[in-house]
Image (cartoon, rainbow, N blue to C red; front, top):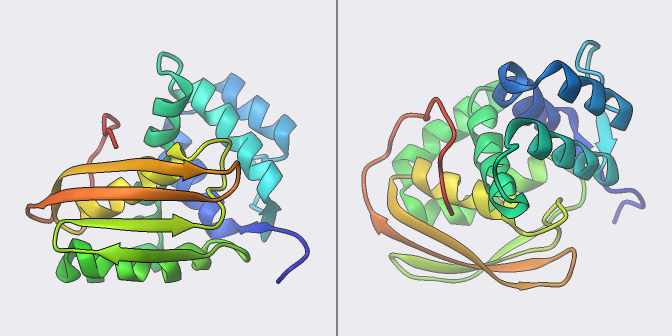
Length: 197
């Protein structure tokens, strides 16, 4: 196990460049720079998880000023996946997701999560045709709602409808989620925020 938890540049690019870039204010960009993310320069190969959490706090305050903190985190998690879809790795991965359906897509989440950092682990502890329980070793945020938003958007991308992702245990780092959904049809990436989890 690595001694330092690192978030890779592709994760930072997905959320802060591709998904949020056009929505960040000048003040938000300055606050990100003060937190260690200068979007006017090339991204570093990696950032620490502590820096990432700081970046999330800045973005939540800057982009989702009117939302409570947990709702802002849900939105950021959904936006993360939307930004990931726009990367070369994400396009290939998400093309497969639309064919797999929700249940089989969840089985791929452990691999997708590990592609963005050097430390996380995910286990699908049980699943049925329309529900699952999933454990995540590190939610990479101050609360479990960023991960909930990411998981909900993953299911929607796989064709699930009426998605609900609820944290049922959280110890400050790891969380267990209960996911339920109805079978729907795969959809195109949304252009704007407004997803619940």
